[in-house]
Image: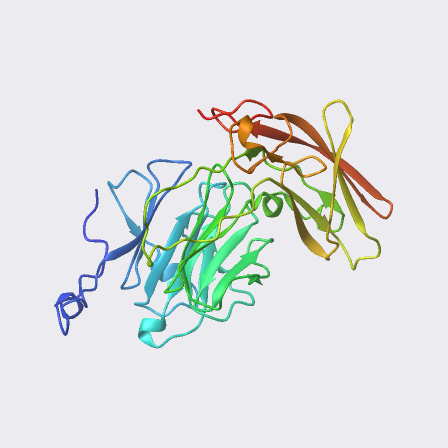
Length: 343
């Protein structure tokens, strides 16, 4: 659906050395989720091409990128989820001994661009615009992943549990809203449920907020037999249960209390809660008080005894701030409410 979108320079197209140094290649591609005829392409020799007619004609908008030297590797290009004319381009110049950060946005199909680098200071290798919140952006750099809540006006590093490592790719799970981070040599990291970030709009940033959690599923353990050897890779599973997220606007002045009630208003559980400024998360393991294990006679050996599936109320108190929200607890497929039953 296109001619050669690169510069097709004979000197760089020739193989050399290990025969892996082939350039003049399209290395970034993004189809607009809002218009199937709108496609963006980035090349390893500095071109940013766009078509608005499904590939019948292409326009190289790279000359419109302010402050970007010619010929640098286009590491990412993304068509916006929210505005048809909007797109983002990340440039990685480290292969050309250029270690500046280049990250730009357009709102008019590439006719004009503006830098959203702000306080980023390393080559940008990965990028992702959030599909829910147009102001929430993620940038993967040579030294970690950064987040912006104001569409690039300011960036802050996500580093809780993350090593300082190059981030090559970023994805957001469309159903679970998990942030998936692909690194260069340090495996894949997952930040579970970033929906609180998606909902933290500018009007809420100065408030204490209790977010509505995503539905929680009651999972049971299944034994795995056989000999797996000494070289089986196993990553740590995320905590099972309901993720209760809240935001505190300032320095903590009081303790946070969180309680769970069932659909009839009966008290089920009190949870230990943190009171850090900013985002906080408490995981309810979906067990009532006291914590019990399902006996072997009920179908499982040391299986957790969960509350029945249904709707629950989460109540939070922090000083004068009081809030409540609903939580849906779902039974694992093949398991009846409150019982461990082998499917």
